[in-house]
Each structure stands twice: as structure tokens, then as C-alpha cells.
Length: 456
Image (cartoon, rainbow, N blue to C red; front, side, top):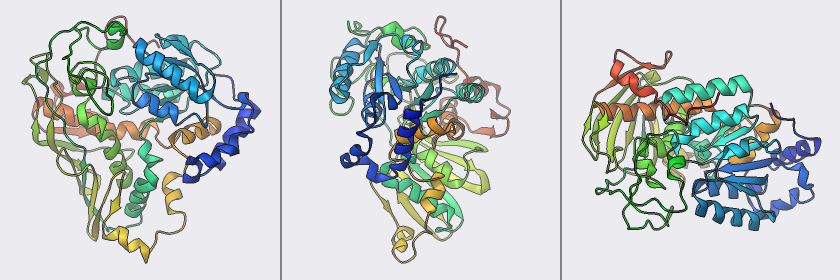
């Protein structure tokens, strides 16, 4: 276990909690923390720095000091060291090997934004090293990994926040959605549709020289050892500056070996909110049915027969049988967001809007005072990092705890398994296993590559 936070840090964390809701997001509130001494702030490190790694780091500067960064790509590491130094006025130490961060006694918590196949190994080792953990979504590559993380959180007593920030941010639209459901504003919920977008297939991606700045073997880590593949065309916009088609940076989401496609990317956000609203955060479905889907390459016994193209589903429509006879649809078609339908109405919510007659009716019939706080379990934090830091002080689990996250992520993992095998899956939410299907149950776990086992 790590050394308890100092009294100064406790006072700072109390200030974070007092900062409250959206007002704490604005620059004018920075003055509330300006008089804190440097050693009053928690000390963080980030492991994995492209895209979301920088995003969660940059929105944490107002709450924490970053002492170290780690990434297996020297260019990514160097660029982020410069950005962190510019923002906090002090240069963080930099490492290729994340284990050097875990060895340091001065670091209170780590933020993990590596590709998905690394999440569990780093998270478990960080907790055993006495660190609290903020790990990006989706938390795991397999259902078995989720069970392991739950075990270690309980064993070590570490605070663990999953990066499903819709629970804390997006102008509280998702909290309002959950409150509308819980206060019966659409009657009895009958159907929930999670629109999570599809993705494009790839052309054949040839073997290519490994970029000089990248430690490819270390990037692969727990995943099977394969050759680096890339086409010369570069990605533009978000996540840009890397090959558009590859089996590495950004494109890793499209490969079973490293992630779960859109099902565990956007699905980890919207299925989470849907389960929360339904009160199904500690249970699971009874059945997953792949109604329509497209796998970009041929599969045999659930495994792709080629290794030179993306293999995660590109289009899909799945039906999930949830408790209380609620039908959940997860689809790549239509708007990205969540449509709730009940016996007395329907409404839609995403990061940009919440619309529908039950929302319009709030003008004349508002939710009870404190309804949003009731959903959140207290005053809504300034952002997802602030909630994490408040939990570090209270030693209670934060708003995106591993148990509720894993329960809803099981739906996403099972959806991928159902499509890979091409059949319905019956799920026992108590035993957390697939009923009567040994082949499908074999997909619930995955062995780490030799040399990259989890250090327990």
C-alpha cells in the first residue's frame, strides 16, 4: 500500500470536491487552487500518450502534477514531454518501460491510455505497486481480465476509475437521461437502442519496415508476435500523423488481437449509460443474438483466416435480452447515441443533445430537486479526473467503478464472440459464463504471450 496523502493534499482534494459541477471547468476557477503549495497536489504519471492519453492528461493539470510519462514510441513520448512541460512548467521524467514508473514511490496514481490489450497487465501491476489507477475504456480485452481486475481491486484496496467520462461530463446530459428513466418519465422501459457507428474494412495491408522510433515488440506486448504492417497513406484529423491502414497506432481498434472494434470502443460508452439507466449495473443479459453483421474477412471457428486485413465487425445489429424483458439493440446504423423507449414515451441522448417529449416536458414538470445528484451519488464532480481524485481521498470507488464497467462490457465482448462464431449465445449472469457452449466459453479468456505475463 502507498503512503497516505499528506494533510496538504487532503486540503487540496477537499477543494476539488468543493469545486462542484460545471463551474469548475472554467479557467476562472483555477484561482481557487492557485494558493496551494506544489506538494499539496497528487502526483500522477501517464502510460500511453497518443490521443486519449494526452486528452486525460491535459484535463488533469488543474488537479494534479505529472512527474513521469511512458510510451513505447519515442516520438510520441518526446512530443508529450514537451507539452506537459509547457502546461505545468516542470519537465516530467520519461520512460519507454512503464515499470520504471511503477517502481517510483513518489507517484500516487497512474493514468493508462495504451491500446486495450495492455490495460489489464499494467493495471494489475500498478495496483500491486501501490498506485491508484485511472484506465481508459474499454477496460479489458476479455471477460476473464475483468474478473481479475475486480479481484485485485478488492485485494489491494486501490481506487480505480475507468475512463467512461460520459458519467461525469457531456454537460450532464447522460445523468439527466438516467434520472428521467429512474423517475418514470417514459413509464416502463421496453427497448433501448445504442447507436455506436460502424467502421470501414481495410485493403490488404503489407508487411512494412518498423518505424525507427517504435519498439514494435514492446508495443505488441501480451499479444501474439506478428510482423508490423502498414500502407503509406497517412491518417488525417483526429489520431492523425500515422498510417491510415496499419496494425498499430489508432488502427489497433480494428483487430481482434488488440481490441474489440466499435463494440468495445463506442459501445463501452453507450451500453454503459443504458445499463446504468436500466438498473442493470450489477447483472447482465440472458441472451445475445447477432441479427445482422459483416465481418470484413472470412472466419473459421471464430478466428480470421488471413492476417493482413482488419478483422473486427464493420456493420452489425445485435439484440440483447436484458432483465425485466427489456430489449437492447446495438447497431452500427443511425445516430450515434442512445434511444430509450417506454410505455409512456421516448427520448434520445448523445454527447451533443438530449431530445424528445419527456425532455420538453421538463419545462413545466422538472425533475425533483437533487435528482441529478441522486443519480451521481453526490455533488457532480468538475470532471472525470476530479471524481477520481475525490475518490483517492475518500478511499471509496469512483463513479466509473470496475464492477459496473465490467458487467456492461461483458455485453460488448459477448456481442463480438457471437458474431465471430455466427450464433446466439445464452449467458448466465450469475456464473458469468456462456451456457452450454464450450467453444464460445473458450473466448472468455486469452493467454498472454510468453515474457509478457501479468506479474502477480
